[in-house]
Length: 152
Image (cartoon, rainbow, N blue to C red; front, side, top):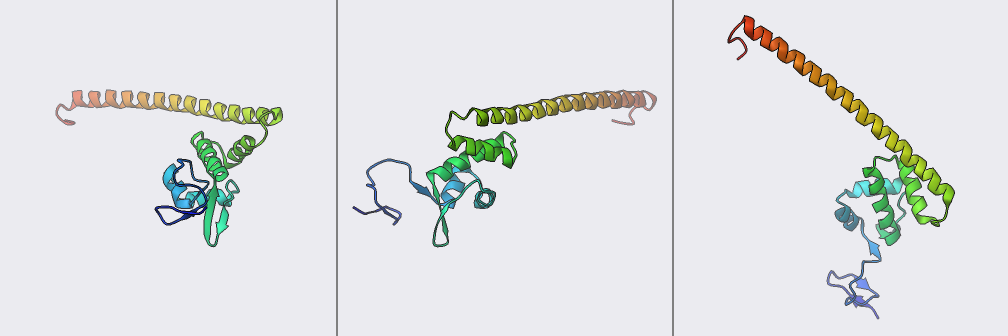
């Protein structure tokens, strides 16, 4: 049986069931994940998504939605597109692939090491800023002693 949904689209499933749609539009995914359609097209160009076509319209599957979700998760982690592709591909492969999991753990460790180094670099920079602030305050206090009211 064919059903016509409230928005006018035709569906083969009953409107009574409360299930996630089997396909998504680019605007629906953009709204759901709070990103632009252009970002989704970029991920498509990078081979992370492969929507079907309905005329000129892109039709995204549940698989594409999952791949987009994993892509955005990888981006939040600061992974490169290559690393994200590895994450997404690993998700779709059988879960007992020890070599893939080992390789992915190595990617995560490298990324962790980079973040730890960045934290150390930031700590050192903040210490230097603090030293410059203390020096500037001391010089300002010294100048105020020699010229009362000049700075204030």
